[in-house]
Image 1 (cartoon, rainbow, N blue to C red):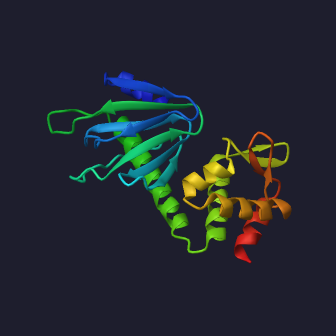
Image 2 (cartoon, rainbow, N blue to C red):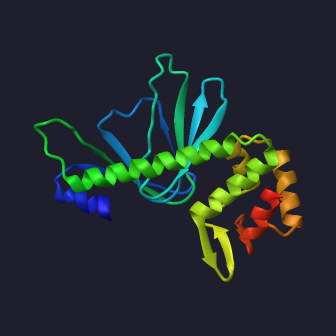
Amino acid sequence: MKWIHSLSKANINYHVYQLNKNDSILYFHTLTNNKYLIILEGIVCIFKIFNNKKKFAIGVLKKDHTITIDLSNQNKQYYYKLVAFDKTYIISFSLTFNINNYINPQILFYIIQSQKLTIKKYELFNCIFKQKYTKYKIIQFILFLFIEFGIISNKKIYISFDLSQEKLSLITGINKNTINHIIHILVNQKIIHFSYKKKIYIYDPYRVFSVYCY
């Protein structure tokens, strides 16, 4: 793995954490500016949870994305919860930037690339959840998942992790009954398919686009 190889070569200490599917980590404190959390492998959904129990997802991240935690609010009105949707490995390390400290340029390049990738995903995620109409929000989110996590097998594309209606409701913040209703319509129209293992898949991605565009 490039991160482990580069950090070892530069004699930078690091820790690797393994999360099994559905494992979670709670963050009540802001990560320091010089500490980095990078996903080596797997899929993580980040939830922002307020003290009044309200919560919403702020991103679904994968390999080489940076996990950014900001808890700068003095009143501690919220915290973050990381949930692994698949077996996930996260690497943690610290870097101190100053004129007397040499930083391997390859590591800097990896960090910059990782942050750029992550920002793009946050922006896309935010754009999806600004969608006014619930139906289109769900369809956009499903398209996002297929683009980011889709695997092609036997002339179909399926999302690599389990995606129940309950999980869709949790991520999107949309009422479970509404989710069930919209999914039922999409399944009846043969636009998407659900397997008994809660895998969601499609045979023709253009049918999903056609529902959204017309």
